[in-house]
Length: 277
Image (cartoon, rainbow, N blue to C red; front, top):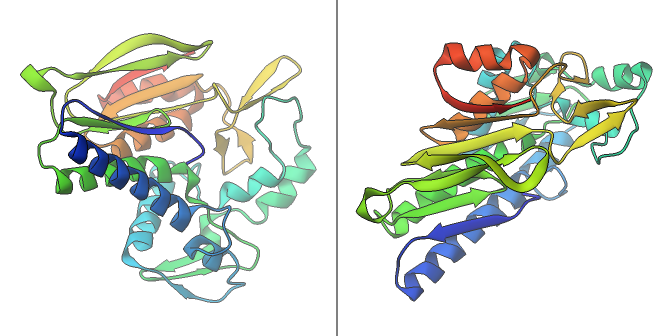
């Protein structure tokens, strides 16, 4: 997941707490191993090295591909899981390097959902095209871990947190909510708001940790797949609360991709949100 992962359990016998913790860890590792673009032995690697050949995928992978298709449509093409190849020219490590337009254009030749033939359960990519689930995988993993906890200990009050994307299914004792801080973009470890989370998910998207600073301008790691450039005018951070972590992540992604219109988009959508500029 490239981030700290934890599960907070309010009250449980030690043996149950250990069982739940192991199960959440195993869930995180399983999804990482299955869908990481950095491995050469998983389904993503098989798809990305298929060289134009059709690949039949399992139900879980098919569901993620369907979800990515929906996000592509909802974002009007700005979100695209084929855009991961842009990492070849963009490195968001806090440095100052910005690629040339010609370098971006060369990579954009490999970007575009129209270069993918997806008819469940078969996917076929044009040669050189790749997919990357990085934009949706973490929130999916959080919800998957919560489902596993519920199967092990129905009704257990706990919070799953993978790198700031969180989910809970049950209230704490005495019907108290879980309290989750929204981290300040300009001061790590400090919160701008405290969110009372009764149940559901909370997701954040922003440039606090991954960015490029060039000629006094901060470039977010959130790329518009239609241009190959970071989204212009986007907030520094968007946090959304929703019924699931996956839903919350969907709203943050769609909002950030609207740039300067992010706040208006969220207001018109009626979702509970927090924005930092």
